[in-house]
Length: 110
Length: 254
Image 1 (cartoon, rainbow over the protein chains, first blue to last red):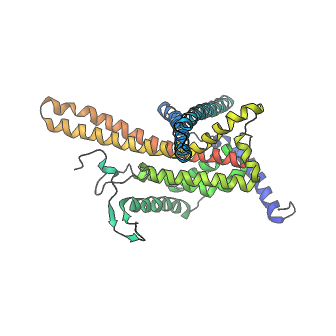
Image 2: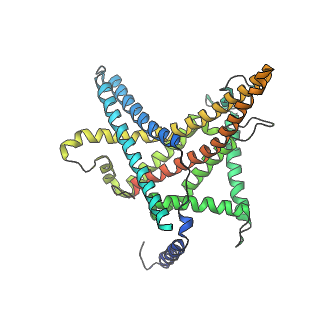
Image 3: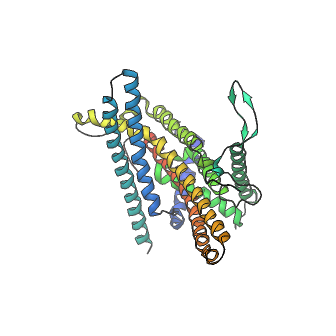
């Protein structure tokens, strides 16, 4: 795509106009999603469990194929635990960031 | 009357079909998926049919859902993510309507919640997962694999790469289990409270009066279920956006 394509130029123009319009209606931009404490807890638990299950399953599968006893299962299970914690920390950080952005937004509006 | 809380999730073939040894019967799940898709389409068509400057209720609802998803994509995956608006909007609407339709009161027929089956949610999540991989490789080529190598001193990579791969592979599981478990648990809870009401009311005497307690609980849980129906559709859609953002913009986070 080149910049002198009339369609692209028109799209850019529209994009700029949209951005202006969006800034003017900042109060609509932040559409609030409801968030319950239970929902947050559940989200974090599934992140942990999913990684655990995937890690365990990979280890178990590799063990069956390679015939390496329970070793790969144990190793991959631990990797799964680590991945699960990573997932949880990442989701929690994301939630914190969203919350911080929301707070900053509400302070600005007041 | 249903006797087990799990009976509402049973799949019953309506039109038995078979092709190549596979059972591809048109079941109640298929029927309700069609109903979900049709009601979502109807909702948006009605909303868009008379576009006025001062919108009617239907139109503002449809417009609200549009801006809601568009803003969500923009904030989670950047303006580039808007290319995937049709997909994410469809996904959101399907999950939302599946959750909401499942909450309809069982007046003539008992509504079936398609999202309470893990195979449905897993199919949706798997589609998202595969799309993220395709988009990632299409945009970045083999460089997409650096998604698994975070910025750490190189000896740490031996440990980090398997962790990142497992973390990546766990995405469709957590995405699908979350939605499915929420729906399954909610509907089971509603059923159990419902049997409490009937059981206590039928017991006679002072116990009948006590049946007001589970009745109040079921009312509160129903309200909560509406919130969860919306929340889970939102979570499904925003996580899709976040995963898509990984594929679109390697290593930089919005």
